[in-house]
Image (tube, rainbow, N blue to C red):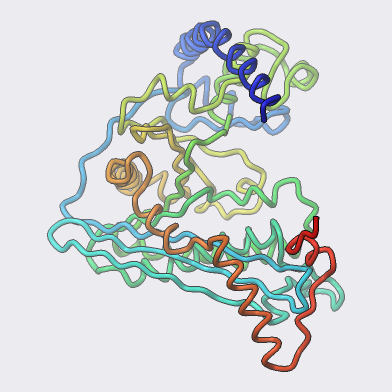
Length: 399
């Protein structure tokens, strides 16, 4: 660490030296973007699939700021988060543990709070594998990144269950942590039946249940991304400013940088850099439509993912909503006002998600206890609890 600290000092010195020039470039980029009218931006971002970067589709305006709407008199925020213990190949039995935590916070004249935690141990072949319905041999074990996708689906299913039990007659904001876009399916070599099981048999039915609930009362589904690293809105600016054809773009650009002007003015910035300048606390950006291939190609029309940014006070957060929320002014306003209210109550982060995380988290100590309970249970049944020598050596160092 003594050697590393010198390198860290060099890094921070170089960052400090470049900050002034960076601010000047950001000002120039914002000034250039201000001259793009909404129709031009919408036209230029309508079809960007051939470009070598992911650019959002402009829905309201290229850039802008919208004040927070007023809060309803009474309302509910329901949130669900999850954690898991993955399949461990060093253990003699295959299983994983999902723990889904959540809360229902009721505000106004009938204020109340309910917290819950629901662990589930998956042990059956149906839970441990995704099987190809057209083949007796095709199957994929649910572990690693795929287990993360399954957990996301279970979070939304549990959220739909929770909203169904919310106090009747009150508007509800249904919140999850992270993204509504299953980015883990993008570019992965999963076979079609895996994606179909995750999206068509899991994710979309849960989202449609929430959409159905919104027909009888104000229910808005939203996902909150803290400290986002996305460049979709930035790339929409780059695309709107670009005078070159796609062939030049393919040779000169990637998702982060361009060698051509004026596109190079956007190099190294993120969406949050733009809106840190443009948004006052509580205000939101325009609504954009993501061009992610997962949402574009796999989600039904009503549940294609839209997003906006909000100044949460301490950070710029990304809020994702399905189309049925984005295109409904009442639900969009409800989402904006309640997300901002949640961030104020949670010191810059939605308090309902924070409370759900506390109910869901599986700590390092929990994992050790789980492992011990599993081996003890095997031994009580007279079964072998042997582990691999590699695992044993890591847990019992002898030097």
